[in-house]
Image (cartoon, rainbow over the protein chains, first blue to last red):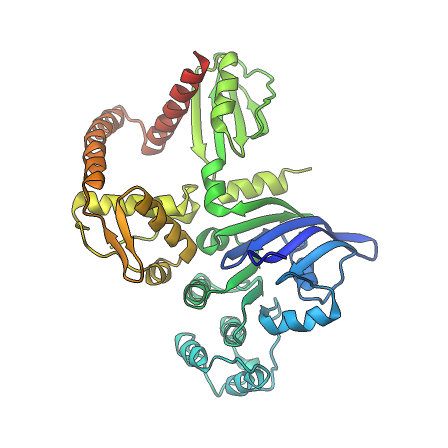
Length: 299
Length: 131
C-alpha cells in the first residue's frame, strides 16, 4: 500500500460478545503527522489501538499499519518492532527502579537511542534510583514515554498519554512530543478526550463516536471550513432546510436561525437571501464546538 | 518575538502565525533580509505542530513575504512585490482601522466587529453571484 499513510483503516468493525465496539471506522494517518484521535470515553479509541497493534482481531473491515494488515501474526511482530506504544495503564514493573526499568527495556531494542535516553532523563528529571511503584502519576507517564521514544520507533501510539496529569505536566509531555516529531521525523497517533491538547499539537484529527470516525481531516482545514451562521428575522424564524452540501444542523429559536456549516458557508448565506433575514452573522467554529455538535448531538 | 497562537480560537494556527509574521514586518520588528526562527525550534518554543509552522512558512513564501533558502532557513523578503503588497495592505489597514475605531466608539465589541467583517465579505460575494 502507499507510503503516505502509516495507518489506514477501512470500514473497521469489532464486536465483543455481541457489543459493537467499532462500527465501520475509516481513517488514514499520513506519515509525519501528529494525529489526534478524539472521542468520549467508550467511543472505541482503545479498541482501535488494540486492533492496530494486533492485540485484537477485527470482526470485518481492514486495518493496515505500514501497509500490512495488522491482524497477520507475522506482520504483528514487525509492527510491534517499529511502533512505540504507551498504554493507558503505563505498563511498568513496579519492583524495578527507574534505572533498572530503562536498562531492562533498552536490552530488547537493538536500535535503542542512548542519546535520546540521556536527553529525556534530564528534561523529565527522572529519579534513577527510585522504585517505579513510588513514582507519581506524572513521573510514571514520563518514564513510559521515555521508554517509547528511545526505542527508535517510526510510529508512536499513545493511549490517553496525559490522562490524570496536571496542566504543567501535560504541557511538558506535549512539548516532548512536538520536539520529538520535529527532530526525528516520525508519526504520532494519540488518543485523547481532551479537546485542548488535540487542538494544540495535532495537525490531523479524527473525531470518533460510537465506533465510527464522524469527522476526519487536517485540523487547520476544518477550522477554515466550519462556520456557524446566524440569521436574524423580523418575526419568528421560518422553518428552513438548506440544499447546500455543507449545511449541517439547523436550530430555530425565536427570531434567530442558526446553521452549522461544515463547508461552503457562502452558499448557505446565498440560499438564505430568499428568506429575507434582517441580519447575517458568520463566526468561526472551534474544535470543541465541532466535537459537541457531531458527538453529543447525533441521536 | 513570535507569540503562542491560540489553538481554541477557531482560526487556523498557520493563519495566526502568518498574521504575526506580517505584523512584525509592518511594525519593523522584522526587517527585510532578517532571518526567521527555524521550523523545529519555533515549533518547540510555541508547542505547536512542526507541520503547521512549515505550512505557514510555505504560504508566506507563496505570498512573497519571506524567502525559503534551501538549508539556510527562512528570511524576510526584500523584493518589491512584497513591499507593494505591504503598501497596499497598509493603505487598507488605515481604512479598516478608521472603521474599527468608529464602530468601537459606538460600543460595538471586537468580536462583533470581526463577525460583521466576515458577514460583509460573504454577503458582497453572494451579491455578485445573485445579480
